[in-house]
Image (cartoon, rainbow, N blue to C red; front, side, top):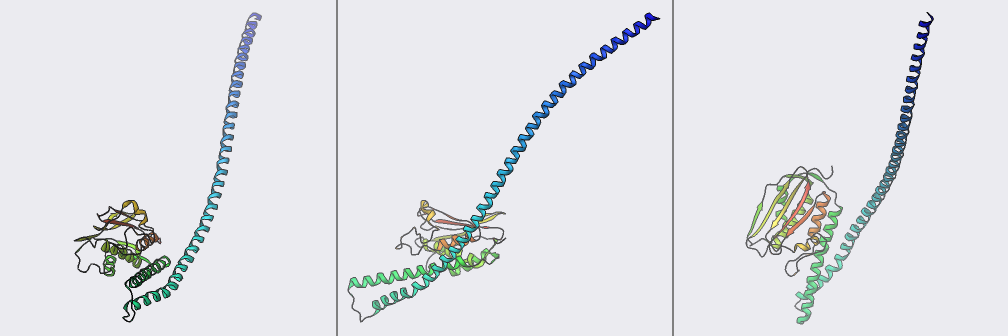
Length: 314
Protein backbone atom coordinates (compact mmCIF):
# COMPACT_ATOMS: atom_id res chain seq x y z
CA UNK A 1 0.00 0.00 0.00
CA UNK A 2 2.73 2.38 0.95
CA UNK A 3 4.65 1.39 -2.19
CA UNK A 4 1.70 2.26 -4.43
CA UNK A 5 1.17 5.52 -2.62
CA UNK A 6 4.82 6.39 -3.01
CA UNK A 7 4.74 5.69 -6.72
CA UNK A 8 1.66 7.85 -7.08
CA UNK A 9 3.28 10.70 -5.24
CA UNK A 10 6.40 10.36 -7.37
CA UNK A 11 4.36 10.51 -10.61
CA UNK A 12 2.47 13.50 -9.29
CA UNK A 13 5.72 15.27 -8.50
CA UNK A 14 6.96 14.47 -12.01
CA UNK A 15 3.78 15.87 -13.55
CA UNK A 16 4.02 18.98 -11.37
CA UNK A 17 7.65 19.38 -12.42
CA UNK A 18 6.67 19.00 -16.09
CA UNK A 19 3.84 21.50 -15.70
CA UNK A 20 6.20 23.92 -13.97
CA UNK A 21 8.72 23.52 -16.81
CA UNK A 22 5.98 24.06 -19.42
CA UNK A 23 4.66 27.05 -17.48
CA UNK A 24 8.16 28.52 -17.27
CA UNK A 25 8.65 27.99 -21.01
CA UNK A 26 5.24 29.54 -21.68
CA UNK A 27 6.10 32.47 -19.44
CA UNK A 28 9.35 32.94 -21.34
CA UNK A 29 7.49 32.87 -24.66
CA UNK A 30 4.88 35.28 -23.34
CA UNK A 31 7.63 37.56 -22.05
CA UNK A 32 9.41 37.39 -25.41
CA UNK A 33 6.18 38.09 -27.27
CA UNK A 34 5.41 40.91 -24.84
CA UNK A 35 8.82 42.45 -25.41
CA UNK A 36 8.44 42.11 -29.19
CA UNK A 37 4.93 43.57 -29.02
CA UNK A 38 6.17 46.46 -26.87
CA UNK A 39 8.97 47.05 -29.35
CA UNK A 40 6.55 46.99 -32.27
CA UNK A 41 4.16 49.26 -30.41
CA UNK A 42 7.02 51.63 -29.64
CA UNK A 43 8.17 51.66 -33.26
CA UNK A 44 4.62 52.11 -34.48
CA UNK A 45 4.02 54.85 -31.95
CA UNK A 46 7.18 56.59 -33.15
CA UNK A 47 6.08 56.21 -36.77
CA UNK A 48 2.64 57.60 -35.90
CA UNK A 49 4.24 60.47 -33.99
CA UNK A 50 6.43 61.25 -36.98
CA UNK A 51 3.41 61.00 -39.30
CA UNK A 52 1.41 63.30 -37.03
CA UNK A 53 4.31 65.75 -36.88
CA UNK A 54 4.68 65.59 -40.68
CA UNK A 55 0.94 66.08 -41.08
CA UNK A 56 1.01 69.02 -38.70
CA UNK A 57 3.90 70.52 -40.67
CA UNK A 58 2.01 69.95 -43.91
CA UNK A 59 -1.12 71.53 -42.43
CA UNK A 60 0.94 74.48 -41.23
CA UNK A 61 2.63 74.83 -44.62
CA UNK A 62 -0.77 74.62 -46.32
CA UNK A 63 -2.14 77.28 -43.99
CA UNK A 64 0.85 79.48 -44.79
CA UNK A 65 0.39 78.80 -48.51
CA UNK A 66 -3.32 79.61 -48.27
CA UNK A 67 -2.48 82.79 -46.42
CA UNK A 68 0.03 83.70 -49.13
CA UNK A 69 -2.51 82.92 -51.87
CA UNK A 70 -5.11 85.02 -50.07
CA UNK A 71 -2.61 87.85 -49.72
CA UNK A 72 -1.62 87.57 -53.40
CA UNK A 73 -5.27 87.50 -54.46
CA UNK A 74 -5.97 90.59 -52.41
CA UNK A 75 -2.93 92.29 -53.93
CA UNK A 76 -4.01 91.16 -57.40
CA UNK A 77 -7.53 92.49 -56.85
CA UNK A 78 -6.05 95.75 -55.62
CA UNK A 79 -3.81 95.99 -58.67
CA UNK A 80 -6.71 95.08 -60.96
CA UNK A 81 -8.80 97.86 -59.43
CA UNK A 82 -5.87 100.27 -59.80
CA UNK A 83 -5.32 99.14 -63.40
CA UNK A 84 -9.00 99.59 -64.19
CA UNK A 85 -8.91 103.05 -62.65
CA UNK A 86 -5.78 103.94 -64.62
CA UNK A 87 -7.36 102.63 -67.83
CA UNK A 88 -10.46 104.71 -67.19
CA UNK A 89 -8.31 107.77 -66.55
CA UNK A 90 -6.27 107.02 -69.68
CA UNK A 91 -9.40 106.58 -71.79
CA UNK A 92 -10.82 109.79 -70.35
CA UNK A 93 -7.58 111.60 -71.10
CA UNK A 94 -7.47 110.22 -74.63
CA UNK A 95 -11.06 111.32 -75.24
CA UNK A 96 -10.48 114.81 -73.79
CA UNK A 97 -7.16 115.28 -75.57
CA UNK A 98 -8.66 114.15 -78.86
CA UNK A 99 -11.50 116.65 -78.58
CA UNK A 100 -9.10 119.43 -77.55
CA UNK A 101 -6.80 118.68 -80.49
CA UNK A 102 -9.56 118.64 -83.07
CA UNK A 103 -10.35 122.37 -83.01
CA UNK A 104 -6.81 123.75 -83.62
CA UNK A 105 -6.13 120.95 -86.09
CA UNK A 106 -9.23 121.82 -88.12
CA UNK A 107 -8.09 125.44 -88.16
CA UNK A 108 -4.65 124.48 -89.48
CA UNK A 109 -6.20 122.24 -92.12
CA UNK A 110 -8.83 124.82 -93.06
CA UNK A 111 -6.39 127.73 -93.47
CA UNK A 112 -4.01 125.58 -95.49
CA UNK A 113 -6.79 124.58 -97.87
CA UNK A 114 -8.02 128.19 -98.15
CA UNK A 115 -4.56 129.34 -99.16
CA UNK A 116 -4.25 126.52 -101.68
CA UNK A 117 -7.64 127.31 -103.25
CA UNK A 118 -7.51 131.09 -103.01
CA UNK A 119 -6.67 132.41 -106.47
CA UNK A 120 -5.67 135.76 -104.96
CA UNK A 121 -2.83 134.16 -103.01
CA UNK A 122 0.36 133.91 -105.04
CA UNK A 123 2.40 130.87 -104.02
CA UNK A 124 5.77 129.77 -105.21
CA UNK A 125 6.11 126.12 -106.13
CA UNK A 126 7.94 125.32 -102.93
CA UNK A 127 5.38 127.16 -100.76
CA UNK A 128 2.51 125.31 -102.38
CA UNK A 129 4.28 122.03 -101.74
CA UNK A 130 4.68 122.91 -98.05
CA UNK A 131 0.99 123.82 -97.75
CA UNK A 132 -0.02 120.56 -99.42
CA UNK A 133 2.16 118.65 -96.94
CA UNK A 134 0.50 120.55 -94.07
CA UNK A 135 -2.97 119.80 -95.43
CA UNK A 136 -2.22 116.08 -95.94
CA UNK A 137 -0.60 115.79 -92.51
CA UNK A 138 -3.55 117.54 -90.85
CA UNK A 139 -5.97 115.18 -92.60
CA UNK A 140 -3.95 112.17 -91.45
CA UNK A 141 -3.87 113.46 -87.89
CA UNK A 142 -7.60 114.11 -87.99
CA UNK A 143 -8.16 110.49 -89.06
CA UNK A 144 -5.87 109.38 -86.26
CA UNK A 145 -7.92 111.35 -83.73
CA UNK A 146 -11.12 109.78 -85.07
CA UNK A 147 -9.63 106.30 -84.64
CA UNK A 148 -8.36 107.18 -81.17
CA UNK A 149 -11.84 108.34 -80.13
CA UNK A 150 -13.34 105.17 -81.62
CA UNK A 151 -10.83 103.05 -79.71
CA UNK A 152 -11.62 104.91 -76.48
CA UNK A 153 -15.36 104.47 -77.03
CA UNK A 154 -15.05 100.74 -77.62
CA UNK A 155 -12.87 100.38 -74.51
CA UNK A 156 -15.50 101.97 -72.28
CA UNK A 157 -18.61 100.57 -73.95
CA UNK A 158 -20.41 97.93 -71.88
CA UNK A 159 -21.04 94.57 -73.51
CA UNK A 160 -24.60 93.83 -74.55
CA UNK A 161 -24.42 90.09 -75.20
CA UNK A 162 -27.11 88.12 -76.98
CA UNK A 163 -27.36 85.20 -79.37
CA UNK A 164 -26.60 86.76 -82.77
CA UNK A 165 -26.50 85.35 -86.28
CA UNK A 166 -22.97 85.63 -87.60
CA UNK A 167 -24.13 85.54 -91.22
CA UNK A 168 -26.34 88.60 -90.69
CA UNK A 169 -23.49 90.47 -89.01
CA UNK A 170 -21.22 89.77 -91.99
CA UNK A 171 -23.90 91.13 -94.37
CA UNK A 172 -24.21 94.29 -92.26
CA UNK A 173 -20.42 94.69 -92.13
CA UNK A 174 -20.15 94.39 -95.91
CA UNK A 175 -22.51 97.37 -96.26
CA UNK A 176 -20.26 99.39 -93.93
CA UNK A 177 -16.99 98.53 -95.66
CA UNK A 178 -15.59 101.51 -97.63
CA UNK A 179 -16.59 101.23 -101.30
CA UNK A 180 -13.07 100.83 -102.59
CA UNK A 181 -14.29 97.79 -104.51
CA UNK A 182 -16.06 99.95 -107.11
CA UNK A 183 -14.72 99.05 -110.53
CA UNK A 184 -12.75 96.13 -109.12
CA UNK A 185 -13.24 92.42 -109.52
CA UNK A 186 -13.65 90.96 -106.04
CA UNK A 187 -14.71 87.37 -105.51
CA UNK A 188 -16.43 86.94 -102.16
CA UNK A 189 -16.66 83.48 -100.60
CA UNK A 190 -18.80 83.43 -97.46
CA UNK A 191 -19.41 80.13 -95.68
CA UNK A 192 -22.47 79.29 -93.63
CA UNK A 193 -21.71 80.56 -90.15
CA UNK A 194 -23.23 79.56 -86.80
CA UNK A 195 -24.90 81.83 -84.28
CA UNK A 196 -22.74 83.05 -81.39
CA UNK A 197 -23.10 84.78 -78.05
CA UNK A 198 -21.65 88.27 -78.58
CA UNK A 199 -22.25 91.99 -78.62
CA UNK A 200 -23.89 92.60 -82.00
CA UNK A 201 -22.50 96.10 -82.62
CA UNK A 202 -18.96 95.29 -81.49
CA UNK A 203 -18.79 92.08 -83.51
CA UNK A 204 -19.95 94.00 -86.58
CA UNK A 205 -17.05 96.40 -85.96
CA UNK A 206 -14.66 93.42 -85.94
CA UNK A 207 -15.83 92.35 -89.40
CA UNK A 208 -15.85 95.91 -90.72
CA UNK A 209 -12.20 96.31 -89.74
CA UNK A 210 -11.08 92.91 -91.03
CA UNK A 211 -12.99 93.18 -94.31
CA UNK A 212 -11.84 96.77 -94.89
CA UNK A 213 -8.26 95.58 -94.54
CA UNK A 214 -8.89 92.69 -96.91
CA UNK A 215 -10.36 95.05 -99.52
CA UNK A 216 -7.49 97.51 -99.11
CA UNK A 217 -4.63 95.03 -99.28
CA UNK A 218 -6.01 93.18 -102.32
CA UNK A 219 -6.31 96.32 -104.48
CA UNK A 220 -3.43 95.12 -106.71
CA UNK A 221 -4.96 91.66 -107.28
CA UNK A 222 -7.20 90.77 -110.21
CA UNK A 223 -9.35 89.14 -109.23
CA UNK A 224 -9.20 89.82 -105.52
CA UNK A 225 -10.42 86.91 -103.42
CA UNK A 226 -11.80 87.38 -99.92
CA UNK A 227 -13.07 84.40 -97.93
CA UNK A 228 -15.02 84.38 -94.66
CA UNK A 229 -15.41 81.07 -92.91
CA UNK A 230 -15.18 78.98 -89.78
CA UNK A 231 -12.13 76.83 -89.11
CA UNK A 232 -13.12 75.17 -85.83
CA UNK A 233 -16.59 74.47 -84.56
CA UNK A 234 -16.34 72.76 -81.15
CA UNK A 235 -18.12 72.55 -77.82
CA UNK A 236 -15.65 75.03 -76.30
CA UNK A 237 -15.03 77.70 -78.93
CA UNK A 238 -15.61 78.66 -82.54
CA UNK A 239 -12.68 79.89 -84.64
CA UNK A 240 -13.57 82.18 -87.55
CA UNK A 241 -11.30 83.59 -90.23
CA UNK A 242 -11.05 86.23 -92.95
CA UNK A 243 -8.65 85.23 -95.73
CA UNK A 244 -7.45 87.24 -98.74
CA UNK A 245 -4.98 86.93 -101.59
CA UNK A 246 -3.50 90.38 -101.07
CA UNK A 247 -0.12 91.85 -100.17
CA UNK A 248 0.38 89.75 -97.04
CA UNK A 249 3.04 90.58 -94.45
CA UNK A 250 6.29 89.29 -93.00
CA UNK A 251 5.32 86.59 -90.46
CA UNK A 252 8.29 87.62 -88.30
CA UNK A 253 6.46 90.91 -87.67
CA UNK A 254 3.08 89.34 -86.84
CA UNK A 255 3.43 90.31 -83.17
CA UNK A 256 3.18 93.98 -84.16
CA UNK A 257 -0.06 93.62 -86.09
CA UNK A 258 -2.47 94.05 -83.21
CA UNK A 259 -0.54 96.81 -81.42
CA UNK A 260 -1.94 100.33 -81.59
CA UNK A 261 -0.44 102.61 -84.25
CA UNK A 262 1.78 99.84 -85.64
CA UNK A 263 1.83 99.40 -89.41
CA UNK A 264 3.74 96.90 -91.57
CA UNK A 265 3.30 98.75 -94.87
CA UNK A 266 4.31 102.20 -96.09
CA UNK A 267 1.74 105.00 -96.18
CA UNK A 268 2.60 105.49 -99.83
CA UNK A 269 1.41 101.95 -100.59
CA UNK A 270 -1.51 101.52 -98.22
CA UNK A 271 -3.11 104.28 -96.17
CA UNK A 272 -4.08 103.82 -92.54
CA UNK A 273 -3.23 104.78 -88.97
CA UNK A 274 -2.71 101.33 -87.42
CA UNK A 275 -5.66 101.22 -85.00
CA UNK A 276 -8.16 98.90 -86.71
CA UNK A 277 -6.55 95.61 -85.71
CA UNK A 278 -5.91 96.77 -82.15
CA UNK A 279 -9.66 97.48 -81.94
CA UNK A 280 -10.32 93.94 -83.19
CA UNK A 281 -8.04 92.52 -80.51
CA UNK A 282 -9.69 94.61 -77.79
CA UNK A 283 -13.22 93.58 -78.81
CA UNK A 284 -12.40 89.88 -79.10
CA UNK A 285 -10.50 90.03 -75.80
CA UNK A 286 -13.55 91.50 -74.09
CA UNK A 287 -15.46 88.46 -75.38
CA UNK A 288 -12.79 86.16 -73.82
CA UNK A 289 -11.58 85.13 -77.25
CA UNK A 290 -8.26 85.05 -79.08
CA UNK A 291 -7.00 86.72 -82.26
CA UNK A 292 -4.00 85.96 -84.47
CA UNK A 293 -2.87 86.06 -88.09
CA UNK A 294 -0.85 84.05 -90.61
CA UNK A 295 0.70 85.25 -93.84
CA UNK A 296 3.53 85.21 -96.34
CA UNK A 297 4.64 88.35 -98.15
CA UNK A 298 2.87 88.57 -101.51
CA UNK A 299 0.65 85.55 -100.84
CA UNK A 300 -2.25 87.00 -98.88
CA UNK A 301 -3.12 86.83 -95.21
CA UNK A 302 -5.54 85.02 -92.92
CA UNK A 303 -6.87 86.63 -89.76
CA UNK A 304 -8.37 84.35 -87.12
CA UNK A 305 -10.45 85.08 -84.07
CA UNK A 306 -12.16 82.79 -81.60
CA UNK A 307 -15.36 83.21 -79.61
CA UNK A 308 -16.39 80.99 -76.69
CA UNK A 309 -19.53 78.94 -77.25
CA UNK A 310 -20.96 80.06 -73.91
CA UNK A 311 -21.82 83.68 -73.22
CA UNK A 312 -18.79 85.76 -72.12
CA UNK A 313 -20.95 87.17 -69.32
CA UNK A 314 -21.82 83.72 -67.91
